Length: 73
Image (cartoon, rainbow, N blue to C red; front, side, top):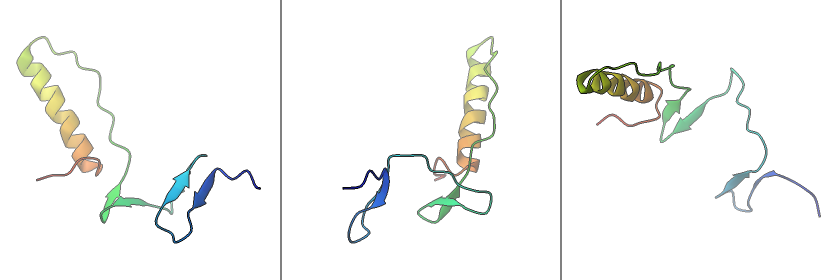
């Protein structure tokens, strides 16, 4: 018996990653045809009121959508 952390089950329906998945610059990761990438940095909020916090939160949501990590309607 081998000690394999990453494998595809017989039939190819399921791949298990028990080790590290390293995607090189030439590689890509997609979900339902949409490429995924790391989201842009969102700075810590320094909002002094609810309106400022809403702005910071909406900026975060926009960055997640742009990275393909959240669907746009």
